[in-house]
Length: 294
Image (cartoon, rainbow, N blue to C red; front, side, top):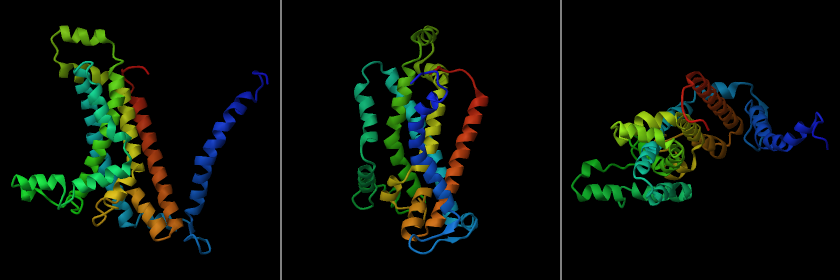
């Protein structure tokens, strides 16, 4: 095979494209086709056009799931990305003796999500949970609600668990980026009398801005993929207070056996995620700016 043949590049790309088509493109096309049908999985398919999509925009639970998802995104941007950035700054300031802290913060990422969800469900338990038991032990009974059973606290409680898991993941990303900053820049700022926190926020953070932007995108898109943590801890309850898009999709498809409507909901979510990614990319391209080149 000669390298100068015109079809050679296409031949080299073909395996990856076929895999992508089999895993992503074909299922997406079939899902879109199913979204205009009324089908329970066993009965005869019936073409309903855009009725499933119109129904979605009248579905209060589905709209609440989007609200919960965006609230969850806002909380995780603080509890995961911002917390991970601060942790990275702390371990960077401590010098080289940080291996223990980096491993300790990263351990939750390696644990199975179901195990973490069950563990934290016990931590939040009203009767035997560590949090409420500790609050009652110091006489703060009024500060000991049913964390996962109260609509006003359930979503925050699950978001805290998500932050506990992924803050170490983003810390590892930011720590690797911080290590690439030229030392002479930090040394010059130190000689000028800048404090460690001033150096961190005025020099280190701006120089790793591209990495921070990628982390934000990962956090936002990852929130739309969340499922197991919510499913095990609350299953969308109480009163749909922690219902997110994926948990509602599973309920529609596997509990109510409405595959056509579920496909329409999945199609809408796909369009929303792609739109957010496109807007984020456009904003990032217009912002430009300085930062480490990777």
